[in-house]
Length: 273
Image (cartoon, rainbow, N blue to C red):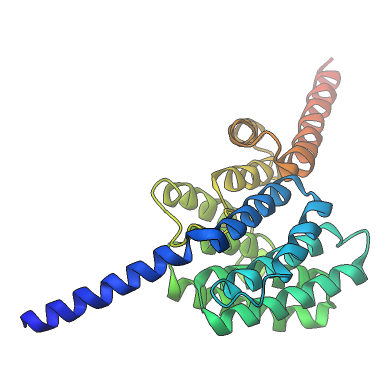
């Protein structure tokens, strides 16, 4: 028994040493810098910066110690670049989607982490948008498989719950989805985020509290709950003033709904006048 404990202690020591080694030193410093720049570009929708970090990561795929992160970062950049080109250049968006899947698959061959399956769900969302209606059902089922695998690996990972919420939002009510289910999941996620910590400091920080708040603001505005939408909007803005999605899409939706409510009120007053 004592010998077993000693062996386990030695194995744990080497595991810990390898983990620390993989997140310190010159190589780790480069990837931490790339991660930081990717996060800034992600939240501000900075296409030029994403392209720059994509090149930096692609130049480091031969670093065996950090190969997994290189493919992961490349997949992440391609995924967000696909979103930024969905409307302006669908063909380019398709190329980014294909490249994102190619790199995430290479990363999964090295380390099958929940983070990668969450990324797959996000990439598939763009693929569904770009594809024909005939392919959406098949790709929807594929998305569910990614979700099940992510939940299996890390059931309380905020990214899993977040992407599940967006999937429910884009699923018609008659097929079991809808905005109400999406809102419930995001509210659940706010509680998870209070205590959750990434397993790896080199994971990209997305699906954070401000993301959940921004989407909750959008959902509440869409369903006409202006007060709730405004509260979520203000809280998200306080956490991340440069949040591109919040400052463009959510703000536009909120203002539209406010104007609709104002016009409805004015028309009601005229009818009673």
